[in-house]
Image 1 (cartoon, each protein chain N blue to C red):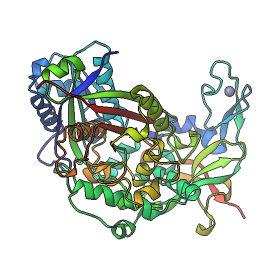
Image 2 (cartoon, each protein chain N blue to C red):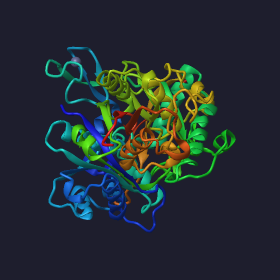
Image 3 (spheres, rainbow over the protein chains, first blue to last red):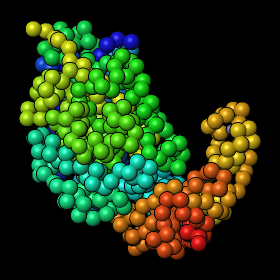
Image 4 (tube, rainbow over the protein chains, first blue to last red):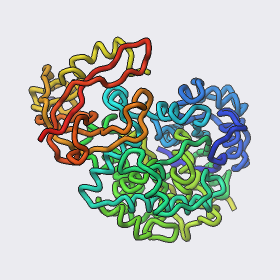
Length: 390
Length: 134
Ligand SMILES: [Zn+2]
């Protein structure tokens, strides 16, 4: 397998884009990424686009060809990748494999979701497709309720508190304040979260990531070529993915995500690194409890210690291991198909010292973690800063 | 709604009405709902039909205040993961129970209830829910 690097990134602002359709959003992110590494559309050999539920959100399928068309790069092959909320991460891995295998030298990876053209109820229904229709949704489950079931068990087993979960939201809103592309630019307090009202106990409204429009794109290139083309490539030193049962009832444990643990273990092996070698991470905080699961399952903290570590500020911008410097899904927003790619954009910015006011000092190694559904898919990528052309 | 389709409901009657699942005679594990392949033994597995016990205990629970389509009028309601006496698990609503008694470890038994009535032209969905005993 050949080494693969990111050479350009593009991100739209995240939020409610009443002025832009799906097609304009993905074109904007794609053009930013291509222009960012001084390439032209004709240099791109293939496209992988992550998108979860465009059929339900905007009635549009056949997204691969739509993206190629909008970017003006037909007739290159363009493929949609779907893995619920991990669609972006799996698209990134698909692009990575296409370059690593030698099939292509330069590939564009996009991620997108346009979620605000339907009502909140319809959006909830679309997102429900990430769970098990026949055994979960049928019985009245919602996504917050599935994470609530995991949260309650974690609280019972490890003494995790609602305040500790709230601390994730507080931190991520604080980081989002420093990210111009984030959906939310307002701080929230522990009290605000605690008073925000149960959606599915113990999870409250401010424990949940929002409904968001947005798109992200990265350009991948074989690393030798990347060093010649670009001043600041970021090498992807691990790209791993694991699956678990679609429904929560099929899981061995409700207090961990096995798919995350397995993908992480393989990623650390490939990269020959340990969790303590990671300088910052973007993790999948679709709900605050999910961030606590992630920082434990990725090995940054012992099982059961994630809530306490968050409360103690260990995951803050200047903490032991800064988590979700972008604001995460909670603060930056969660256009589901875009999220996994947007995480890679943040890793690229951090490793190039381009994350402005939220820059992590001495960032050399970054990790991203993207989850589909209630944990049935997990994708982990590890990135390293490398030198390029002078 | 995809999960209110008539053929789907018809095909799931045994599962949803009386907890019909299956059992692998090779590794002795019960599955609910029934599986096509035993994930432990795969080709070596020997799956036979089996009814699940109608009692179990709550593994975890939540109270929903925002329900999905078709459940708006029932909110708030309780949802739980129930571990049946043979170790198989089911996600289900908890009904007819004192809210204070709905907690992790509480013993529950299966009851038969209306699940949803989403499609005005379609069938009403019935199936299992659980209630706390004692
Ligand atoms: Zn078996």
